[in-house]
Image (cartoon, rainbow, N blue to C red; front, side, top):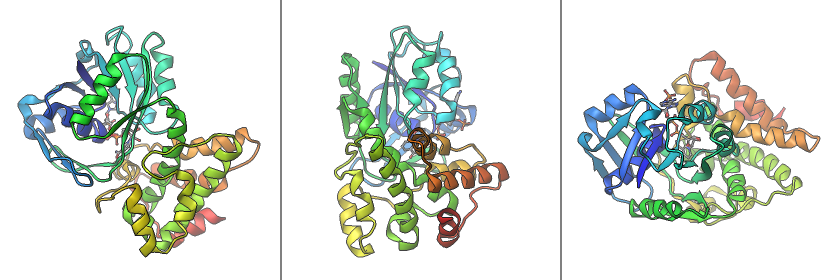
Length: 339
Ligand SMILES: NC(=O)c1ccc[n+]([C@@H]2O[C@H](COP(=O)([O-])OP(=O)(O)OC[C@H]3O[C@@H](n4cnc5c(N)ncnc54)[C@H](OP(=O)(O)O)[C@@H]3O)[C@@H](O)[C@H]2O)c1
């Protein structure tokens, strides 16, 4: 099974690199700057949060292409671009990839697999979830910074279980599930706080263990969970604890929370949302595909989601200003979102 990584960035390089290091046939599709970096340094893949080995992929082992036509002989394609790039990428894949290729979106948000299906109506397109964080370092280094599972939507296609086995062999706990949408709701709630990190610059640990940030995270999540419940969606667990427990957990004192949070996931001090990295690099963020889903949900219920709406406005202001993360203090952000 030859696996194409569609979008060689943080997730694509980490996942594809680990598969490659364990002997899978992998082709990376990405930008020239990444191609040059991997040609010079290969891939250095550190599992900073779990128990996986640190793996090195030599430059000679990396097969990297700049055009979708380079993925023509891949039987499985893992889509790892940011949500705003999905439709364009899928359009570019149409006509370039094998007609029977299996396409799996490993992106955040709710709508990426559908966006791919619209462009590739004759392909089997599945959704998935990457439940862990990857931070990009220098010279081909990619560091997994939290624990968390990989989730792939079940389908009557033998390649799904073959892929899941290959991912497990590469030290990534992988579940194949039939209730993907219910898990995507959970992941969405967790991802709403990527924007809090992007606006404040706070690493993930600080968002959870510092009370000033925690009240923001709680307010954003409570608003979302309330709407999700009113709409009749029931999030199912990604990791050991239900996301519905989050508001209660975030009320605990920091010392107790540290203990409880460890049951859900281990967080390396380097963990930070990729939305922060997007603002740092002057790129558009995924805020409309994350917090924007909560605002859309509120509208569908004839109401509003003012906290998530204000968060979106602040992120858009930062995107337009193009000066990187605005580095708001927790108090400044609290005042801005609490109206
Ligand atoms: N990073 C994480 O820790 C994490 C964790 C869980 C889930 N996710 C999700 O996984 C998805 C990918 O995130 P990421 O952080 O890995 O993104 P990323 O680092 O931006 O990686 C995507 C890569 O694809 C490249 N790309 C986009 N369009 C392309 C095209 N047409 N041709 C060639 N290359 C192209 C991008 O280049 P340019 O930047 O130059 O466009 C970028 O290098 C997102 O939905 C994200 O929410 C991320």
